[in-house]
Amino acid sequence: MPVKSPIPLISRIRRMRRSTAAAVAAASLLALTATACGPGHSNVSASPGSSSAASQQPTGGADKAPDFSNPIDKGHWGAKRLAQAMGAPDIGIRDGRLGRQNDASNPPPRPVTAQEIARPYERHMAPVGKLVFDGPEGPTACSGTVVEDPAHPGRSNLVWTAGHCVHSGKNGSWMRDIVFVPSYNHNGVPMNQVGNTPAQEIAPYGKFWADWSITSNEWIKMGGPRASAGSAYDFAVLHVRPENNTGRSLQETVGAAAQVAFNAPTGRGLGPVTAVGYPSAAPFDGARMMSCLSRPSHVNMQQGTPDMDVIGCTMTAGSSGGGWLDNHNGKLTLVSNTSLTGPGHTMLVGPHLGPEAQQVFEAMSRKFANE
Image 1 (cartoon, rainbow, N blue to C red):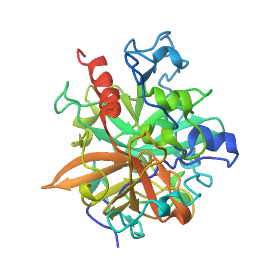
Image 2 (image 1 turned 90 degrees about the horizontal axis):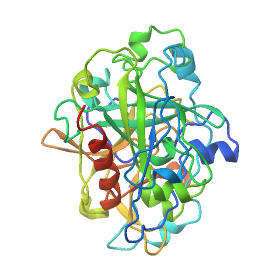
Image 3 (image 1 turned 30 degrees about the vertical axis):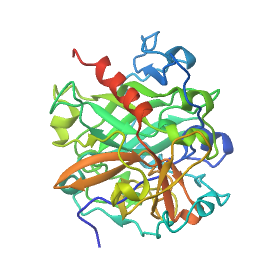
């Protein structure tokens, strides 16, 4: 039965059209490999979303990655192309490191079967949507969450997702044609019918194009196709604009946004969280918004890097970037995002949102503070 409340953490599993290693590395759920920044070195990398933009955000790190171009193309993401943004097999943690770090004080999460959010999705999980883009191997999909912008209370245009959903990592580039679709396919039409379904059903709030993207320099420098130290920095923020110039912000359009909690407790100290997203690899097909509710444990990918949170969840590729939400007193708070999957798709791993994530978020908020 569909559930009315959000569920646990999602991993950084992006849907890939093909299953080549290069494609997975560039657009799939691969973790960010990263190292801590030294004194005076910013961990923020930014990219403009305009074809005429020739420079990146001046807040450090921007010169380390090439620019991307993301001009609005109204004919690009029709219902049929949206349906093509499906996932290949995802890449996650397969070396047993999760089990080795569990003990009585840090028990492994129990597997949780993902459940569909009650329809229509916007009544129960309005800030959540599907993020689609063109990666190295074609149409690809992640998940994202509308988050509050302190510079624009009640009028946010910010979307939280995973770093690997916007940039392919070391020696890579920014994704193209990045679009956020809030409450995608809000009535859960089967995927084989999506291409022939009216646009209002597939994109009930329209489409929002990214005009700026910021992720961590750790991901830009060391991101890759395997779980690694960089996975702890697999987060990103997008600034978006409506495809049709409605004059309303994303938050005003969907009627909700999640608050972002930085420096929250990790593992068991966090309490139960709900991960939400659009998984596309079998047994899912990317047509439905799913969720898992689970109490996290924690894992460390490499000595000297922040711990990551782990939850039980069966979501697969396509759920990458989806928010891990705390629904306390009816207020949604984002505490992590899906980055990695565990063995057998029984668990998800997400970064702890510490100072590095806060720096990325604040850089984006400042960038558009005067608009």
